[in-house]
Image (cartoon, rainbow, N blue to C red; front, side, top):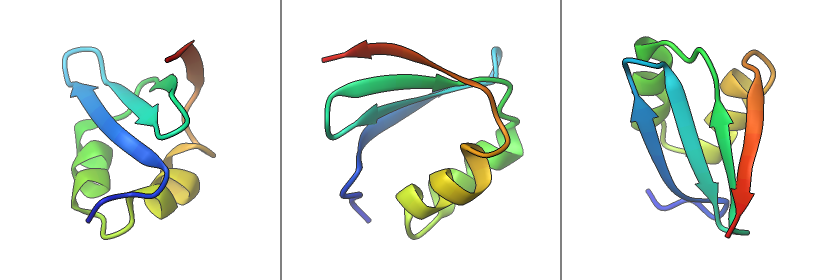
Length: 67
């Protein structure tokens, strides 16, 4: 299902980095995200809700840029 907050996302399993591109244009890397968490995120009906409840509170992140 399309997200009202997330434009697109990428995952680098070898680095365990989840990159989120928000509709606003902001780009964030979430660090040390295990494959199983990414798999659950990808399968989630609401990716924004999953991100807010299961990723943001538990994983460090860095702002990469604003598009």
